[in-house]
Amino acid sequence: MTDTSRLEALETRIAHHERMIDDLNQTITAQWKDIDRLKRELQRLGDRVATTEAAMGPDPGDEPPPPHW
Image (cartoon, rainbow, N blue to C red; front, side, top):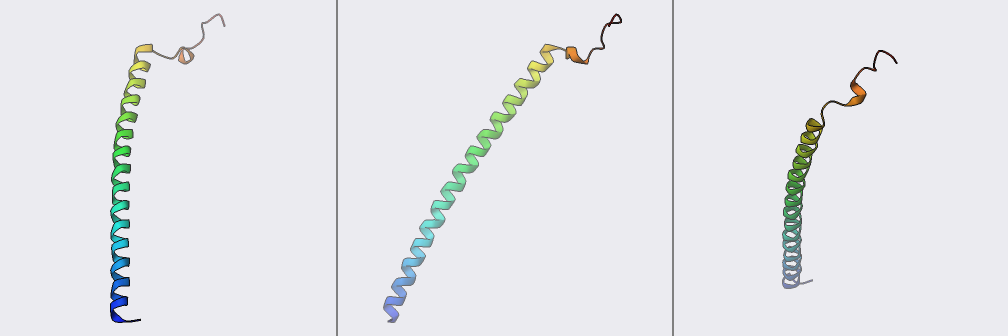
C-alpha cells in the first residue's frame, strides 16, 4: 500500500466519521427539542389536573361515614 493510497483511505474514513458526527449531532438536537416540548406538555397537563382536582373539592371517600352507618 502506497503512502498516497493510505492517505486517501484515512481521508475517506475521516470524512465518513465527520458526517456521522454531524448526523448524530442533528439527531441529539432534535431529541432535546422533543424532550423540552414533552416536559412543557407534562407540566401543562399536571397543572390542569391540579386545577381540576382543586375545583372538584375534597374526595367523598375521604369523609367519614354518617353516624347511622
